[in-house]
Length: 488
Image (cartoon, rainbow, N blue to C red; front, side, top):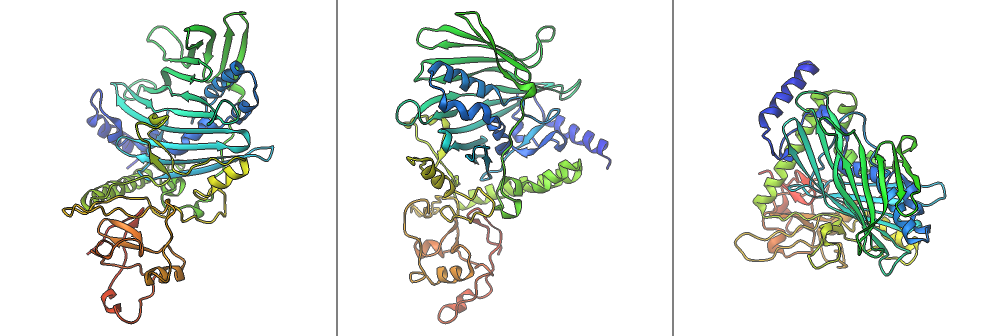
């Protein structure tokens, strides 16, 4: 099938699924409109202008500091692929880590994970310890078909903290995102636009930037324009006016003095992309390893292979979801935890599990690097060897929660469990399968840990002596993210 015929066939299939208002997250989109990058990685576009982000902690004047946060906020929207491209939808449990090396020998770190699939939620953590900058966020896109247009409603917030300013926890800024529109998906020329209002708020400084990303009208207006005001929240007084285009020059005008200054020039800005560990060092669910076959095909413009490989990943994800449902397994994120309604900034939904509260940048870096390998050659940290699932045995009323190794519970020892000894001898995690997932050997009761044990990893030597006959003809299959599907 030629490329043109394939594209026509896929488009006809997509059109047949579309109704105005339809949820596009449940519709398979053609690969030729996909960006060869997962949403977890695309979020880092937001952090790729360090010249606007890192100096924030050095600005003493509160109003100038707020304006600089607005400058940073507006500086990354021009970073996007050519044409109209949609990032790959992350799989549940997919994660992506990266880092930046800056010229002054300082660094920044980024950890993200897909914490929910329906509805989609991408949670992330960014920190530049020496620069006293921390960002926590959860992006919750909702896609809708609008006739000849498609919209991604970019719900969710980001919380930026300047840690050496303000009170305990730093000076806080709340940021939302504009929505994204694609025009002309069925007829006419396809065009990407940002639209609607977003804001930057600082409760401590009593300042809010209300920014409108303007979409072009049928007869009036222009593409890519922005407008808005910075106001004092308590009085509603407008202090500054914002104008320009998010992919060209943006301006700020002092409404008291009338002075107008260039806020940011996107036409001459250079993005600073992060560095990532080599794919051969990554785990199966790390973004670049997971999507490598799809991305390779997209870069070669081989739409057939890209479609086939993407279908394999999506099929596996559906099968895993079905298996979890049958086994009564409640999926939990690996690096992030769900926030409770009474917590500060609970609108984030999820936040990094690890407490990063070191009193010095060196201590903070140690806490971050203990979460998961970020640098090339870093050893795997078994603090989070499996997602902390919390299954419940059907019909028993018992809580069969698996042990969460993120808690400070003692690890299993060879003295307490021969299976752990065998696993340690092979240099692999000591895990055993159960009817509801896998768990560290010796950490849960025999009635739960071995109830439906049909197999054992072939990498383990067969134990000798009493009980070895019970483990004959055993093989472990399809182990993935703490869930074991036993093939009988």
